[in-house]
Length: 420
Image (cartoon, rainbow, N blue to C red; front, side):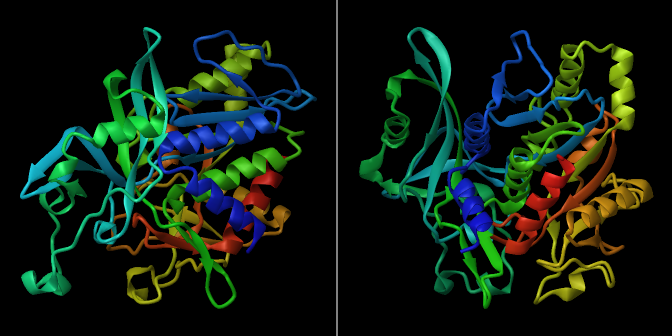
C-alpha cells in the first residue's frame, strides 16, 4: 500500500469527528516540535519557532516562523467536519420492543449509504471533574448502532426513488428494550468517566467501515470523511515536511464548514484574523505592518472537488470535468462562491509547476448551482489573495467516499513546496 495513503487512512480512522481530527493534528505537531499556544495566555513568538493554537477543540491553526524575518503569510485552509447525524438531547426512544436513538442531520449528507452498515458514536463529553467543568473526547470503538432499511416487500418504491424523512427513517437502532437507559453508561465507560458526571455532549454517528486502497492498480482510496480530511492531512504533512524558510507558513483547519461556517470556530469567525494579528504583534510589528503583510500574502482554500462520475458524466461541465489522479482541481465560479480569479489561478498554476504536479479545472455546469466553501467566507474577515482548489472525488458527502492515491501524494508535495 502506498505509504502516504496508509498514513491518510490511519489519520481518518483515528478522526471520527472534528474533535478527534484536531486532537490527531495536535499530536502530530507536538511530536514534530511545535509548541501549543493558548488563546487566553500571552504568546511568545520567536523567529525559527513552530506553534499551534486550538479553538473549541475542533479548529486548529499551526504555523512556523522562519529564522530570517518574513512578512508574508502562506496559508492553506481546510475543514475538520463532515456531514453526519448528531445525537440529540435525551436520545433514547423506546418503541415496539426496541431502543432507538433520536438524531438530527448535520450538514448535507447523502442519506442512503448510512443504512445497513455498522455505526458507532464519537465526539466529546462535557463533564464535572474535581469540581471543574472540562471536556473529554470519546470514541465508542465497537459496532454499536445500525440504521436498518425497510424490506423491499414493504416498500416496493425503494428502488424507484424514495424521499427519506430524517426524523422517521434515519433513527439508529441501539438495542432491544432491555438496553433502555444504558446509552450514556456505554459512552461514559468509553470516555473513562462516570455517567453521573456528564453535563453535556456533542456526539455524532460515524461509519465503522475502515478505509481501503483499491482498484486495478491500487489507484483509488476510499474512506469516510475524505471531504475534507484528505486536504487537512495533506496540508499538515506539507507543513511538517516543508523547509519553512521564506514565509510564515500557516495550516488552518476550521470547523462547521458543512453548516455554513458561522461559529466561533468556523471560517466566518475571527480565529484566523486573531491568530495572524497576534503573530504580527508577537514579532514586534505594528498594525499597519499587519495590513501590509496581508496584502503580500496568499491563501489556498482546499476543499475537495467533484470528479467526473463514471456512470453520470452528463452531470459534469462539458469541458471542465476533473478526473481522479489527473491533478489538483482549481475551482472557478462566476458568482464568486469560489475565490479563484485570473491572478490567483495563475499563481497556483506556477506553484504546481514548481512542485512538479499537475492541475486541472473544475467548474459547475451552468444550470447547476454549486456550494461555497472556506475561501470566500474567510475573506470577509481577512482579505487575502486566494485560490480555491480541491482533490477530485466521487460520492461526496456519502459516509464512504472515493478519491485518488496519487492526488493525495501530489497535494502533500505541493504543500511542502508552498511551505518552503
